[in-house]
Every structure is written in structure tokens, then in C-alpha cells.
Length: 633
Image 1 (cartoon, one colour):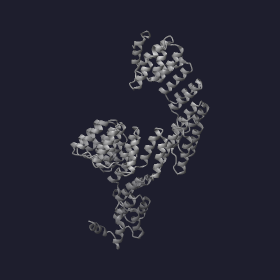
Image 2 (tube, rainbow, N blue to C red):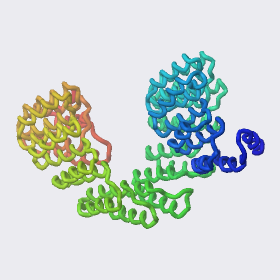
Image 3 (cartoon, rainbow, N blue to C red):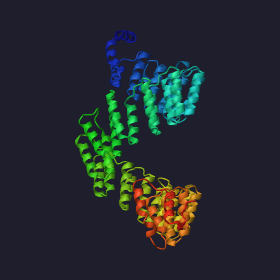
Image 4 (cartoon, rainbow, N blue to C red):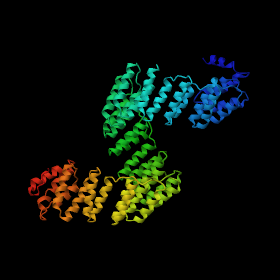
């Protein structure tokens, strides 16, 4: 085969063909440094004698990402290019996102007449690029233009545009084009079906997705592992774990072997559902079937173990990977996941030990490693060590990102160190890192809790240059103003909030109720409570608890009972705090013993996790104190 190919090319070359061929031929091997070999041909001084060699050189340079050299060769060669030459260049240019140069070549093709007219490959290349970049409507325009110019789309062209629509969430438009294929006699292939099935899965339209599986069978097209995995993944993401397992069974039944990705998806779902033991068994089953778990598999399991509070098992698995007793070595994410698990539990010393082990084993600690450790240290108020790690991170050439700074700012805000937190906000801006709403809201909350309303308002006005305030921003400021007794300012902030098109949420209303009730303005608190219900929000248990306290101070027993009935009618779930408040509110003539004797039994019942509804509480109280007339309506 090789000699025939050599003979076929030899006719195109002048003397000394063998030297040129031996130099150029390795360019056809993807594993060779193609641009170097292609450059040698030109360096030898041989002119490019024909279109065939020109196309091989252009293809070689383009596929090896040496587009400037490919363009220079294209413009300077004496060999005549053809449509394939243009296609190779356009494909390479688009791959490198050199869109201006690609468009220039595209326009040039159309101007050079019929001989250089774009063919189906040209259109497919450009439409594929447009679809991948979310410009599917533009791709559809080219689809129509292609037809107008006399080129009928094939299955590849249809599939490219259908995939584009499905990736954009426009699965119905993709389905419309799919129907058109049939009417024009173009048979879909497995890739076409795969694009549509994936689109329906993303949209949660399982009936249509499984219907396409049946249609594939009718057409004699066998679903591949990617289609089944796509279905299984989508079912898992929608919380349909049992259906995903049934799909796996169907896959095996139809003779399609699951791959590592399929197993990874299912192991991840089992971990999310807290079925860690099942996930471990699934991993062992995977190995028994001859599949090699990859680092994604193990990282998924490590994450599941950490979230299930089985961090020691996660560490054991990591050690097995390090010792070569598993099918692959860990990566930085493996270590970071365990570090995060330790930090979340407040075990900072073990997290730091893991960090040291990571370095000793030759793994590079990345920005995430440092960010997790800094967050863990701040969580247990080890501010000095956290700042040292931040400096070490920069010293090692690792640039803190927005997540790093958000972690630091939030950590110091939780510690009440407003000046330090604000200093990091300024540093963040100085480094050119964008500050987001989360950072501002954290700092505003800390300032308001410290009663620094003037500073909070200055920061609020400053933040307008970087991001728009949200409901949380205004709720925080309203609470801050109420905290210092400035209810007029709080009302002004509410007005500003409404002018910006932001509506109060349940937390905003709850904040007003809490502050009015605590300041003795019970009538105002009751008005806000009614307004909250009118606006379609259901008061939570905290709002009720606040009102119960206010009504108790005023001695409003009738209103307390009415409020209790309102809770029962709305089936509000009770916690220990509000049960305690209710029982204290219902004491008769100052005699606590009549009703408060039930508090321990309620507390014991709720501590078991059984819960207690307001309706149940009223029934029990009515039995013990019928004079209160607490029988629910």
C-alpha cells in the first residue's frame, strides 16, 4: 500500500522526489511535529509544484495550529488552490478563533466564481462553528443560502444545525428540522438522534426522549453508549435515580456495554442520594466488569464519603490511590475535597496535615487548596494564620481569585473585623478583580450588625459603580436602620427599593415585623404581618414567634389565641423555640405550672425528630386547659 501511494505522488514531483517525500510523509502522522516537517520542505527550496502538495502542506500546517505560516504559503505559492485548500484554512482559522481571516476567505471563495464556490464541507464547517458559539439562527441562514446556491444539505449538515438548536434549548426547532429531513429523503444517523435525545433530556421531556429510542429501533439504528449515558445523566440530574438504573438495565439488555462515564454518572447519583455503600458496591462491580475507574470516579466517591461524614474512609481511599492499590493516582482535586471536608467540620489541623502530605507527595497546591484552608482557619477565628497563608499563596505565584477574596471577606465579616474585611475589598479592586454583590452584601451586613450605618451607606453608594443592589442588600440596610431605631430612614430605604423595581421578600417582611415588635410598635408589626400575607407570602415560624412575644408583653390573650388558630389553619411547622413561647403566652393568672409542665414532653418529642404541628399542639392544650377554648376551628 505504501509503495503504491509513493508511486502515485511521484508523478507530481521534480527530481529528488524521494528526499522530499521522506521529509514530508511524516506530516500525515498526527503524532509527529507536523509544522516542523512541512517547514523543511519549503526550507529545501523546492517550489510547491501542484495543488495536491499545496493542500497537504496547508492541511498539515493548519492542523498543527501554524495558521500564520499556512496563510503566507497560501498567498505566496505559485500552485493553484482549490476548494479543499480554502476549506482546510477556514477550518483551521475558526478552530483558532481567527474569525476575521476566515470570513475574508469565505467571501473570497464566493467572488472567485463557480470553480471556487463553497461546497457542502465549507458550509458544514462554518455552520458548526456558529452553532458551537450560540449563533444558530445565523447558521440557519447559511443553511437556506446553501440550498439557494444549489447545494442540498446532507445528514451531517442537518445534524450540525439540529445539535445547535438543542444545545440552545430550542429542541422543538431541532425537531422541526428533523421532520424536514424525512420529507426530503435524508436519513438521520445515530449522531442526529443523539443530539435530539440529549436536547429532550435537558428539557426534562422523557416521553419524547424515550420515543426517539423506539424510533431508532424501527429504523434499525442501534443507540450507542453516548445516547444511553446522556439519558442516564439527564435522569440523574432530574433526581430520577431509579429510572436511571432502569435505563442502565435496558442498555445492558440491548447489548450496549456501559463505559466509565456511565458508571461515573450513576456513582455520582448514588452519592447524592446518600447511598454511599451502594456507590462503593457499584464501583467494585465496575472493576469486576473490566472497566477501569478514573480519577473522576474516585473523586466522586471521595466527595460522597466526605458529605456523608465518612471522611476517614475518604482518606483511606486516597491513601490506596497513592499506594497504587487503585487504578489511578489522585489529583489536586482529590486532596482539596478532603481538605474541604475537614475544614467544614472545623478540623483544621487535619486539613493542614493533608495540605502538607499533598506537598510531600509532589502535588502542587493550587489556588483552591489555599482558599479552602484560609476559609477553614477563619471559620475557627484563626485570623493570623489565615493571613499568613494568603501571603504564602501570593509568594508562590498563585494569584488569589474572586472566590479567594470572597472567602476572606466573608470570613472576617463573620468575625466582626469590618476594617480588615474592607481592606481586602480595596485590595481586590486594586488587583483588578471584579467585586460582586456577595462581597458587598457580606460587608454591609457586618457594618449594620456593628451599628456602623454611616459607613454602610457610604459603601452602598459606592457599590453602584460596580454592581446593582438586590433585595438582600436593602433588607440588610433596613434591618441596620431599624437596629439603631431610625425607622424613618428604614422607610426611605424601602421606598428606594420599590423605585428600583425590587419587591420585598419574606425575609424583608420578617425583618420589619421583628424590629417593630421589639421596639414596642406592635400595631406597626401587625400591619406589616397583614401586608405580608396580602402580598402572597406565608409568614414563617420566626415571624409568629416575634408577634407572640409582643402580644404577651401587652397581655393580649385573645389575640394570642387568634394568632395560634391562624398558625394551625396554615399548618405552620413548629420548632422548640416557638412551642416554648406559646406555652409561656398561655399561662393562666401567672401560674406557669398548669401549662408549662407540658414543655419537657414537647421538647422530648421534637428532639426525636417527630416534629409537632400547630394543630396537634392545640389539641393537646385543649385537653389540659379546656377553659382556654383552644379547639381548632
